[in-house]
Amino acid sequence: MPRLSVIIVSWNVRELLRACLHSLPLNDPQTEVIVVDSASSDGSAAIVRDEFPSVRLIASEVNLGYSRGNNLGLKHARGDYLLVLNPDTEVVGDALSVMCAYMDTHPQVGVLGPQLVYADGVPQSTRRRFPTLLTALFESTWLQPLAPRSVLDRYYARDLPAEQPAEVDWLVGAALLLRREAYQQVGGFDEGFFMYSEELDLCRRMKAANWKVVHLPAARILHHEARSSAQVPAATHIRFNTSKIRYFCKYHGVTVAEALRLYLLANFAVQLALEWTKGLLGHKRELRAQRVRAYAEVLRSGLKGEL
Image (cartoon, rainbow, N blue to C red; front, side, top):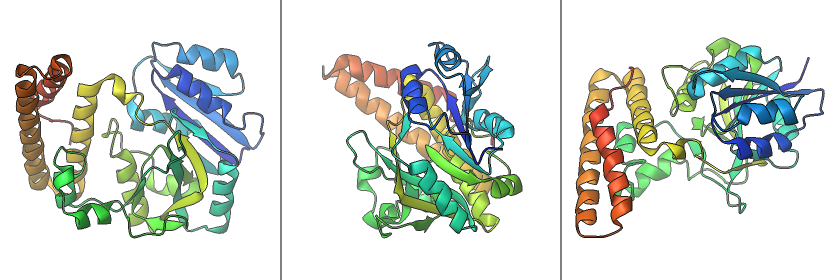
């Protein structure tokens, strides 16, 4: 039986997936790698079959989304530790063995995240505290620069030491190591989140079950970030924000979630008006037109996802 299972859900990022797989210890009998391909049209499944015969490929005929795709991979995984890994990542050095060793000596940790870094080695911000409604009104909106500093400092856990292991509320999900026992206790990802906020929800359930969530900066993984979602900007806006609304509905109630939905729609309406005005004045008209179309699509959706 393998000690570590690596689960990668991929959609139309063939070259990044190839680089990710090359960074993994594919010849290590203690490591199994599972790729769930969500109906990619760029030949991703073919390169896994042809170039990485030791990798288990699960080729879906439909786009499963992040949560459902990872749950499918997790069901087939046999390892004591389960690494949910984005295809736009590359493991640096001995990060995997460092993470597994930390889990060995800290049995109360249910979720462990490495230090994600950009291609130039600069660390990414991945440590979080649970969002409040005030956080949601600013974070990842065009009003974020106007947020009170204390609100975002708390949310991004900026008071915690950067170079030491730190217990947090949740971690950005590009690379999450799960303990099998914890995963079996709380279950996998909530498939009501197609993508975005699913790792927030999972970590919240882990914490509720008395498992710790820890950030481990000694393990480093390169993260190219958001290459799949960047292909569909309007859909990305819709999925990100409907997931945010769903999270607040799940943990703060329908009234709060509905207020947040209307607030976010108002934000997109203002953005659309600003972009239309800039385009009318002749400033980067093609870019402004693209943004107007994307924001209009968001408004048409009503941000009414499944709650």
